[in-house]
Amino acid sequence: MNRVKSFAAIALSILMALSAIAPVSAARVYNADTNTWEEPSEAAVRAYGGSPIKKEVVDYQTNYKPGTIVIETSERRLYLVLEDGKALRYGVGVGRDGFRWSGTHRITRKAEWPGWTPPAAMRKRVPDLPTYMPGGPQNPLGARALYIGSTLYRIHGTSEPWTIGQAVSSGCIRLTNDDVIDLYERVRVGALVVVNH
Image (cartoon, rainbow, N blue to C red):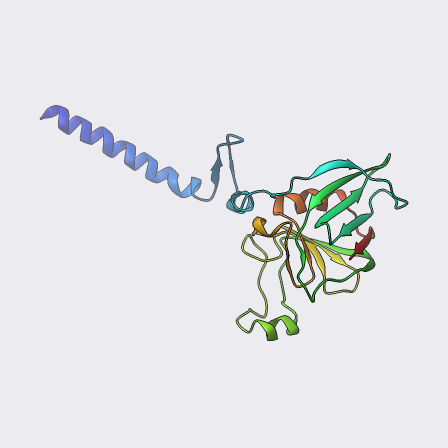
């Protein structure tokens, strides 16, 4: 009987110690890949998986300067022009039929975890859309957005990685959150964007 009481006392002590620690650690999430604690929003970005089309450095002969973004909508690929005839190629989701476009613009703004205001025409097509959605892991713009000229279009992340390689958007170019974070770090405001149909 004394063993049972001793065991119960030890178990209760452990539970009390854990309950004192739990509120502090609940604000962070353990990442087994890196063996570290991190913010829940960082874990949410990874939780949706990577691109079905992996980014890679490829040979790319062009007259565009390094830092230029070239989007080939028919290929479902985005090329970031590098030095020495190379480019970093990403898989992207593009505009569905009736929403594809082409043109040359510049990146006019960059935003981390951007909020989203669906355009009036989109809200008319999809009446249950909110008038505004704050930035975060569930936001359709994902982790980063690069705003294209004075258009309504953006190069942005997505929490739906299975849409990469598909024609599904209302004209925006989407990458996985991991890929858009990588592109965001490499591209500056003012960079040339060329969208080919």
